[in-house]
Image (cartoon, rainbow, N blue to C red; front, top):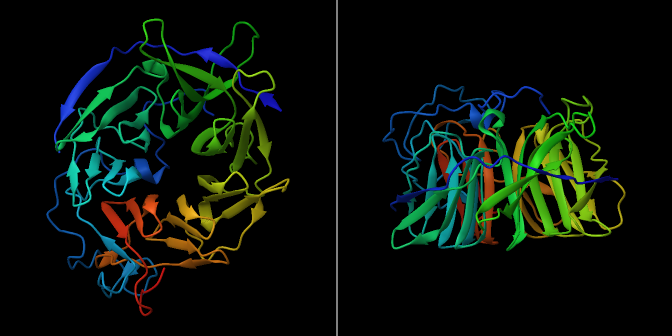
Length: 404
């Protein structure tokens, strides 16, 4: 087992406040081009076409990823909700503290908020792609794009949100994509990023860093500690501060470890986590991870890959999947109510027995890729993706797209 070692990260960026209404050794400051969440333009012209409007989309009507016949919101379990975000942008992540307090982020510096009635935009001073949003409460919400583009808000109130750009987690010349953020409560927050090696003069080695944990500097401000580890971190889930799982791509170091899953548990004498790699039985990259409890954890990824870890198991179980599309995110309200989303409008539901496809009232044309899913309850779930947000408010009558 490998123990986490904390290293001081450079803290160079002063805190700036903005008020808004309603495992590579050489790293580019831009997100990797192969990541579909980063390939959308960073600037565009607003498209007035609302979700559900007719459009041929230029796709083959006989293709599985093309909508040639519209479903209504009375038929389909998932209904589009307008966001006012440019159709040239993608929404990559969604999180909320409750049904009337939901955040989504995406490309072009996009951050939007849902107050129970409608989405509203909160313009930002950056054009970076925000890849993750997460909060410890309604008044403690974080959004990350790069290791030098990290924002925090104390919440949405009175039709406005005040976002603060906090201190960098890495020096600007070492900035790289930040893909995930998670914490267990006050004082426990970490960012997962693309792995980068550095030279350690004390050992003469070149270890990797792909995580940063939140701390305080001598003046009581935000500081970050870099954590040694392996693999580009793509997702976190944990039941507590001492029971944390992550999915990572470690193929730049070991080509066979695209689908790496690591488990962090309490170090014997405190001082962080001890990390161990648990066999995922996957050669595909895994992007999303979520659990209903410490004894029931799911992971999803490329080519429809689904894996499950249950109590007492020594490795992740291979689970039959009804799709070969890439799956990017997973969330559930219970062990018997789990959702996974991915490319070409893929929405899957687990009912405790098996995974089945679900449908949405997409516009005519090519189905959007879907990147994030979160809910406040079984009948209040959100999905976000390529210029779309979808809302599930409960099963619909059986039929063309009914049920879950």
